[in-house]
Image 1: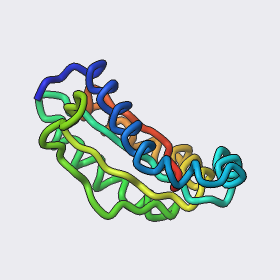
Image 2 (image 1 turned 120 degrees about the vertical axis):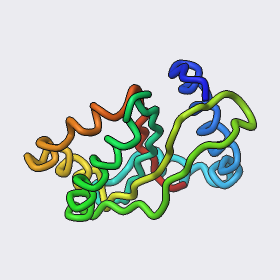
Image 3 (image 1 turned 45 degrees about the horizontal axis):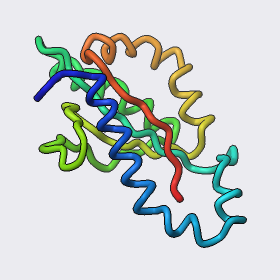
Length: 142
C-alpha cells in the first residue's frame, strides 16, 4: 500500500464525512436533538477510531506485543473492541492504513485514566516502536 500519511489522512476525513452524510438525515430531522448531540456528557460512551501504519521492519510484530501488553489495561478501564480490520481498497478518496479498529470506552475519563496509568506508560513505547503514523479520532454515536 502507498505509505503517504498525508494522503491517507485526507482519505480518513473523506471516510468520516461519508459516515456523517449517511447519518445526516437523522440529525437534520430535529434541531433540538442535533444541538444536544454536539457535546459529549461525562458518562456517555465514546468510541476511539484508530488507523495505523506499521513501520516496515517488524512494526506489525511489535504492535502484536503492544496489544498483548495493553489488552488487560484496556479491559481494566472498561475498553472494548470486538474486531480489527485491514483496509482492502479505498472506494472513495485515498486511504492506505495497515490496520483500523474502534475501541468503545464507558466514557472519556476511562480512556484518559488508562493512558495515564503507570502500567500503560511502561508499555506505551511498544506502540511507538511499532508504528510510523497513526490517526486516533474520538467518536460518539449519533
